Length: 453
Image 1 (cartoon, rainbow, N blue to C red):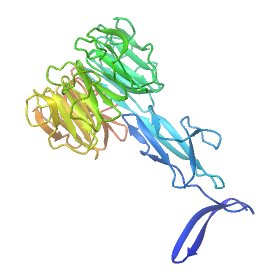
Image 2 (cartoon, one colour):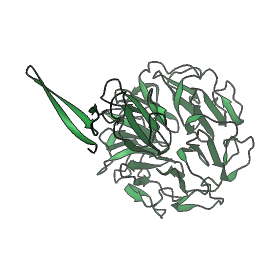
Image 3 (cartoon, rainbow, N blue to C red):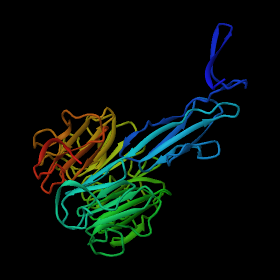
Image 4 (cartoon, rainbow, N blue to C red):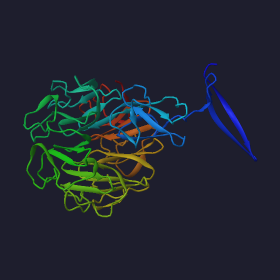
């Protein structure tokens, strides 16, 4: 007989037991292994993810692939723990158990997207291509020119990328293979190529590999490697490179004493590093208390544990806690700390009325939070409409970006804001003097508009 599924029902006492089986010819029936399940579920995200693959069948093992091929008992990788997805990846998994029929193939597309902005904007699409628009006076759009552009265009020659970060006049990008690429202005050595010559086309940062996260300040850049070390280059007047000096570096140098790092963020001239144990380190310029009391690159911000993410404004700092609340410290002249005042603060304090936060971002004087329900909150400076409220009035506590939902990630430009929605669309609002909103105009927007690309 042909292979088919049947159900065996066993009556024991007052209980019914069901078992899915396969019968093939006259061979004994075999139970079927339950299909693997991915957690988190497939979809788009702005960050790297650790994907758990499980099956409900006791004693079963799982094999998976990341190249689109179908696993077999001898091919594919044996699952032993969460699979880190750095760039857009298709996962396929099959569960096996001796004497049982294998599960069906479970497949999931885990798309990675990203966006970063100053007066120019750079984004990664889920297909791994990189796109740019806005100000381009130093070649920071990477298209071989120095002309501004008000609509997105693909950066030539780039594919397989996972994340981007931008400074005042330069761009860095993380490829899925763990290498870092850079282009644009380079007066402070922020391209990391050993020179101070600007470049309008992308090139790989020499000597860097195994990188899992990147960040950039006004004129310095950072890379977090998979081994937990942090590497930095560019301007270093305030010690923002963390190497124990105040000397600029044209090539990556290791931040002294920092280990177990998983992510970083940078303001104009200060740096935040998130460690795997939930602590945060801060170093560089502390003019407004944006280091939160940290005294050395490897010294944690006092009173902080259970941190999940970090973000930095121009002279302010933000920490997303594991309970979904946000701590803020540093400059607060335009209410960007969200505590209801305009008083700067040298120690972390809570952003008023904000909980269930999934991710955070910041511009020069404004701040953004994505809530777990897909809505967005904004607060701080609003002179260019970057809060998305339809006005230009500053807000000292978080307000909803009206009529906006299904968001999966947010990004802050200098005086503009961006959001990725679950359907893959990108929306922007705020300053548009150089076309950095990407809507084909240089008209500022006080409410979100969709970018067409």
